[in-house]
Length: 232
Image 1 (spheres, helix red, strand yellow):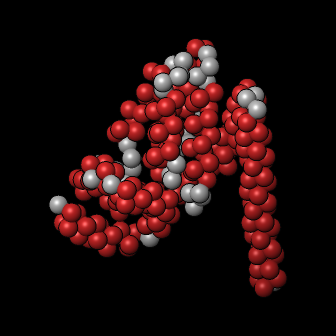
Image 2 (image 1 turned 90 degrees about the vertical axis):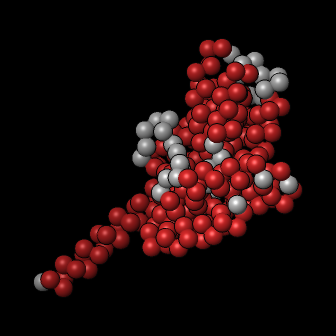
Image 3 (image 1 turned 135 degrees about the vertical axis):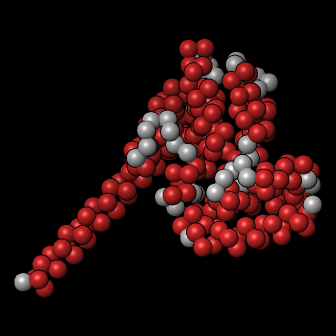
């Protein structure tokens, strides 16, 4: 009897897992279709249609990760091992921030997306490109004060994903030193900027591994302290 029940239980478990996989795949297909529609609309300057498609994309993403509307964070993606999509999200927030620059009545939305972009841009390979584009956009923006919100946040942000995960705090003294070294030294040279580019491309995945395996955090902290000792 017990042996008969076990295969049934395993079968039900497999069915649940299969249903979850199918749901995730369906949601991804929906997100992909909305992204494509939004990109096409942007290309032909149909900004209203682009905004609708992008906001639907974000809402489906929030439902997929089970977070409240407007509360997406990079940490959500780390926990779900989908760090690659963070670059897509950053691009969507950047487009929405520009779209909602067209009218004063959309100012609140522009500010909201500027703040969201400031969370995602520092942890993607798009970081430097978006900052450069924002610095150019502010010259022609109807509401430059809202673009400044993003740029001001970028001056304070620039997350060190690996260090933050290893120390379990973005404000630890060592994390702050590494961030300062990046801004004051690495950004000043071509090779330093290349290093930063590849760091932001791969560090979220490394941080995800650290978050899953706590035993790796102590040796990572030790390695980071050696780096700090060498560059000081």
